[in-house]
Image 1: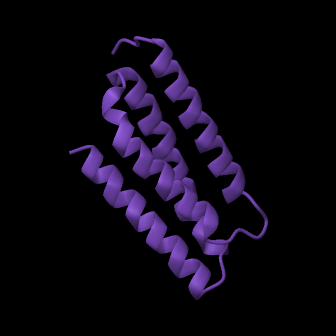
Image 2 (image 1 turned 90 degrees about the horizontal axis):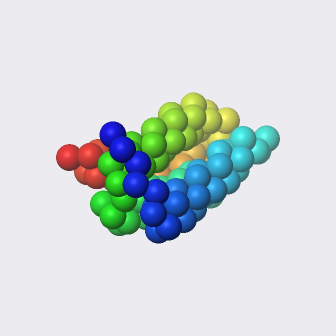
Length: 105
């Protein structure tokens, strides 16, 4: 795996890193709602749209970041109140999983 850090790859990497860090911070809130989970689904969707433009090494790095964040989100869903909040969060996580599986096929 080699990294070709041209300007667009570097900008894209920083953007995804920033979005993933922000998503993690939002998920760590004491009283999270479904919004951070929906944001995560949007990050994964966006990555699915632009990820094919990235070098393989950078894609592997972002895949790893997203995998870790989705795993953490699956653990965090347990702190949400049952009902609407948890259902919306679970729906967003299901979308993440489907998008990530589709992207890697």
